Length: 560
Ligand SMILES: Nc1ncnc2c1ncn2[C@@H]1O[C@H](COP(=O)(O)OP(=O)(O)OP(=O)(O)O)[C@@H](O)[C@H]1O
Image (cartoon, rainbow, N blue to C red; front, side):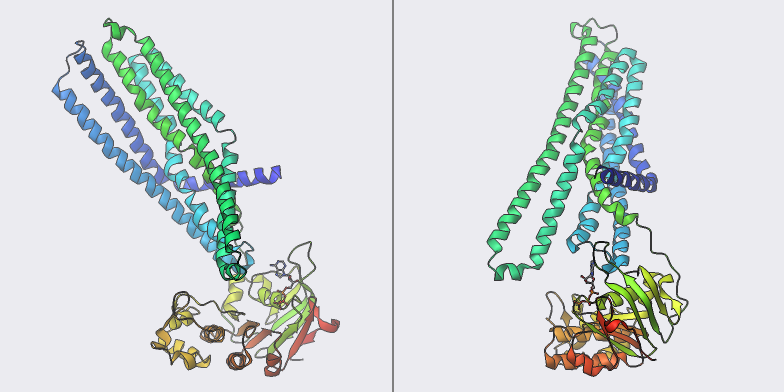
């Protein structure tokens, strides 16, 4: 447990380091602007010291110094705005890059990634958001917390070495204080993150199952349980904030101690007998400029902790090696699929999903896979779509080892129609075009006709351009399946894979969808996983699976 958490921390640290390196150029400008602000602060302290000494009757500064001090104040404000903008730009840039990378990884993995939907969305939204403070505030603040105070302390030391030393010693106390108040803060931050993840995951899950909750009259009980989870998050957030409050309080204490030491050293100022009043006032006035970057550093400390927690969650996704494999030269017009003694186990402690399965489907043939629930039918399709790799045996396409191909290349060969088509919030036309975005209207309409989408779309007020999906016109299960078949027609691949395409349909609708599916399969190699009796009649060749192998122990070699 300890080693896995330290492994996660190391992975998080290396991810943040790598990203910081890519952001280095962008981070230079806030740091340089911050140094500019510190330099202005030093110059302003000189001018204000002379003006104050004049008020005490110990110097002869005038309007020129006052105007210069005011101009410096304006310049510092402008530099501050520019610095804030540069920091935000660095944060946004890092977030956009990381979000695109995480998104691409999740999309590439597809259903092969076992994370729950809520967790996936938390990864690309909340976790990436939590990294902003690291790049926008923590990294520039950490660099400036070293450079700017050194610059100010050096200026003080030139004027008065002892004052420079006092500032320097006060500065050294800050990381010590940070280390003491930060003990346990990393853990508190991680726990807060976990609580947030639990709450958002639960919320998403229950929202998806809202009709069931209402049906069983469980909404009140669920609202209470969500309230408990929200309260847990509140307590953990307060714990993290407490650390931030304590460290801010400790910082003020250090500043007060430094000011007191400097005041003690320059006590003669009050009596009017100080030998160098401008120098004394100058060192006192340097205190805010000295501590401003350290304050920013302390304020950004918890952002760094939150970012480490987020990076620990993101690292397994972003550091996973990209799927390797060969690329297809061309999509062949015809494919023959062969499984030889294929074995696959989803987890070591589970029985094998495929246990030495052999089958062969020749080009243009349709194979019906039947068998009880859990027999391994969908697993055969998942392998052919590149979402799972077998642990043993051989899967060949046109005689060549298919597993040498990149998973994405396998998907270029096939179209898939599942149990319930996902309909995006768009027009029917765009939902079909989704399968091949470059397809022209004529091709989309031909696919819609072939899949009998036109039969119901023609009766709609805007035909194929009717908006469907969430908030749009609701499609029935059979209509949505026909849109899915139309997508497969449009994709026009040599291999089509269908997983219970008529699972939830009444007999009448089933016949219409099966008719469309049968036409889709003509001239292509097709594998249809199904329990449906009607499908058995529609397609001749059949292979029954039983516990991951061909029923009866034999293998069916179609086309033999
Ligand atoms: N992601 C997964 N992780 C672990 N086990 C899995 C996973 N997916 C499937 N299995 C298991 O593998 C076995 C075969 O599953 P598969 O989905 O291929 O069956 P199926 O024949 O398609 O079933 P159904 O007709 O119910 O869809 C089952 O025992 C199932 O529990």
